[in-house]
Image 1: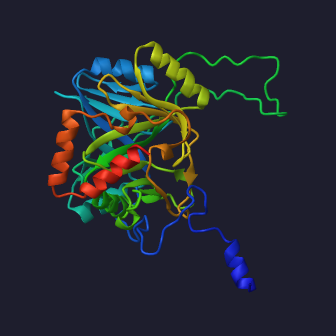
Image 2: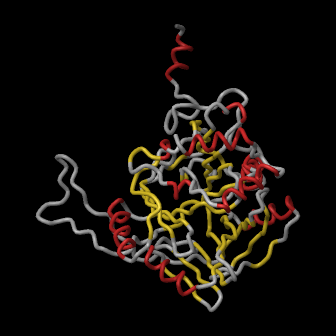
Image 3: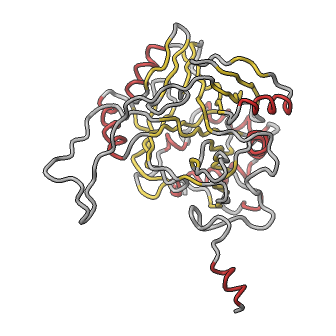
Amino acid sequence: MSETRAVRSAVATPHQDLHSERGALRGEHPGRSRNPVIKVADLAWLEFEKPDLDRAEVFARDFGFGVAARTESELWLRGTFAGSPCMVIRRGRTSRFIGPAFRAAERSDLDRLARATGAAVRDADVPGGGQVVDLLDPSGFPVRVVHCVEQLPELPGQRPLLLNFGTDHRRTNTTQRPPREPSRIQRLGHVVLETRAFARALDWYLETLGMIVSDFLFLDGQRGRGPTMAFIRCDLGGVPADHHTLAMHLGPGTGYVHSAYQVTDLDSIAAGGEYLAERGYRRSWGIGRHIQGSQLFDYWRDPDHFMLEHFADGDLFSSDVEPGWAPMSASGLAQWGPPATRDFLGASPSPAKVREVLHALRGDNELDVERLLGLMKAMNS
């Protein structure tokens, strides 16, 4: 072997074998746009409507949120980290997810985005003030890009427990007693969405908001048709960003799947889960550790049946890490933990689900019988 070839063979593959055994094949989706309109810096908050703000606030506090602001018609929730709120819940006739708001890196990004899309820059109704551009993604989700004037100050948070490892004894003559209290939320981490227009929506987020893919999932025997799920992060250049700020997958529905909120450590997840269970809330799936993103996770349902995740210890990638590719399967969602539940997978049969599937198969979208059968196989594999 020549010296040049030997050097090349020692260099890591494009995705660096960090997060998947496989990289892209020739001609597959690159997972990024060469010339996006802007590059968003983070997920700012999520927007919901609910008829009972009092009940929503009780769950929010039990789950570990702080209240940033409360009026008769709005509830703004926050974490302990400085920055923007995590969530706004507005009073509405029914419980529904409205859409995500992403944070612009600079105020000038809003002007650039408005010129490119024909939208307008307007004042944002966020505590502390700011400006926003309202968009609509190809799935029909309202998407806001915001630049906030004032940031919420940092609040006291939970301290991680001091742990002993093998012969590394950091704690002596004292016991471990994690408090039985809510897992104090630090920040919003990511949101997961289901869409019938996966490929179009994926390209829109890459081209319009400058996001980049960390991992693609594909259906068994259908890799040639392209991916059916993407874990997407913000492009912060050399600054490492969360493995995914947005995840999307192809499905018969179009809507919210779950959102995830960072807490301190595993003990915070576990003790906070005990606190929730004692108050009658229902765990959807957990505790375990994911594969894509590596997070420690625990999923819960709120009183309106929305799924929320406590997570800790997630992966951080800089922009030079290219996408990994892996087959989609229920068993491939976790390194360890209990098997994924039917509730988490959204696989519980119901008349509404059947109607949703029939509507999707008849509509102008990316779901067909082959894709549907592949998704059903993945949920049971």
